[in-house]
Length: 232
Picture 1: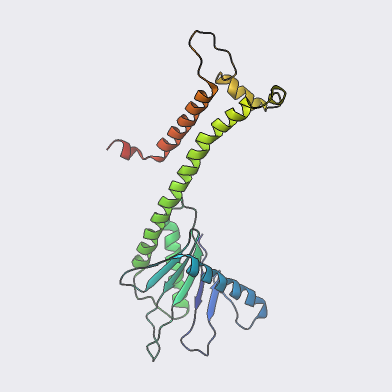
Picture 2 (picture 1 turned 30 degrees about the vertical axis):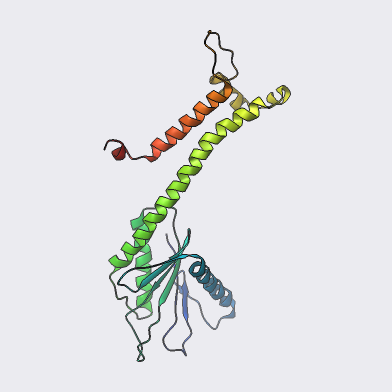
């Protein structure tokens, strides 16, 4: 469930700005809620300053986003007698990259529309426009996160077996006796510590470790590739 925080500065300067968190408006005159207001303003400033800015063509939508947070700035239809406008500012956090995009994007668009209606404003574009804009940004982020995840898994799959073998080979015999039984049994099963009876020269320990690393990397890579891409 995506939870957004919204703000709006009325065109009437005599009225205080509206800040809504978890569908509850913060009271401007309540001292205990000043910290919440300050925290909200700080989050907006952080994302706007550090994030990437993207403006959807031919619409009044601007989105600032970092790896984990986003700020959506939408311009309502309403203007005052001086033709001034005031944006609606919405803050939220991206879900996990495996989240279905249609679910959280619908929640974001629905909540922004609800807030606009609650302050008697309307957005000058259809929901589909904002949905498409968010979906484009989300797909780019998903690709980025998936590549990072794959690289991390490959590094672990290749380095871990080599590191374990290296530690084992450079560990004194007395210390080897303290190696957990599970790890020792695993090495015995793949015959790293067992003598070879035939005349064929046995593979070195590092060769076996390298084979295990390459096998792990191959398995992870294949698991990330869609079958449709392999049979084209």
